[in-house]
Amino acid sequence: MAHPVTLTDILAAEARIRAHIRHTPMLADPLLPGVMLKQEYRQETGAFKLRGATNAVLSLPPQALATGVVTASTGNHGRALAHAARAAGGRAVICLSHLVPPNKVQAVRDLGAEVRIIGQSQDEAMVEVARAVAEEGLTEVPPFDHPAVVAGQGTLGLELLADCPTATTVLVPLSGGGLAAGIAAAIKARAPRCRVIGISMERGAAMAASLTAGHPVEVTELSTLADSLGGGIGLANAVTFAMCRALLDDVVLVTEDEIAAAMRHIQAATGDTVEGAAAVGHAAILAGRVSFGPGTICILSGRNVAPETFARVMEGLAQ
Ligand SMILES: *Cc1c(COP(=O)(O)O)cnc(C)c1O
Image (cartoon, rainbow, N blue to C red; front, side, top):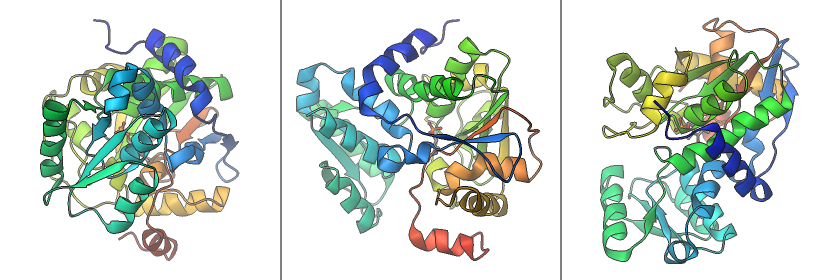
């Protein structure tokens, strides 16, 4: 069966977003021979999510963009959508709950988005998204389960192969699966023998549990250093679950201590700060959970970590 996102869609996304996103550097890991680091945390807004959000925004008719796009994301997707909408001259509305810390709220406002603070949970913020779509005609751009978002994330797969045509294994941080589905669609079309492995944290890995069950399931959300990998995949998942099931070679889980060690490793290797979600590929390598060698690429997906959290990790603590 044809997937909802194919190489053709990803090539179209690449042409659409090229002028709006950075081609991020690829670096040989000086501490792990054979391993390459894709420094996607150097993307504007600090994470790859700008690719999918920009593709979704630029795929909309001008009238829809002027009326506005909406999401309930508290993290990298919300920032990316705010940035992408502003860059395209459109309006973005980000719905957040009262639980979201003030610095995160301000960061979204600073990107020019209208912030609505509603209720005490992500679910209540989602209700406001549905209301804004139904009553105000806004267009929802979800964080992962949307063909244009997946196609945008897939441009990272094309970029990886351009940077390193001999890639043998790509380790992809895995949450809702937009990144992994997009990258795997690009890589399996262009370099079918290259392995694509999704990596999640042990604490609350919804896609991994769903793949094991054979259908989307809910998991309890737990606190984790890889907070950008938290949250569910949606019981009515329409795009990413089936693509991850068909296209990923394997899914590997890592512990909090392994993520912390990997964040320290990446700091030593690059001098840069990355968030826990970005370090899971290294966590799997350093813990011996995946085989690696020449042509192994780790996607360092984002850098948005609270300074207190990063400082604690540097001191050797996982929590
Ligand atoms: C969103 C995100 C991921 C996971 O992406 P999915 O498409 O939800 O699987 C990984 N790393 C970072 C930094 C993210 O923001």
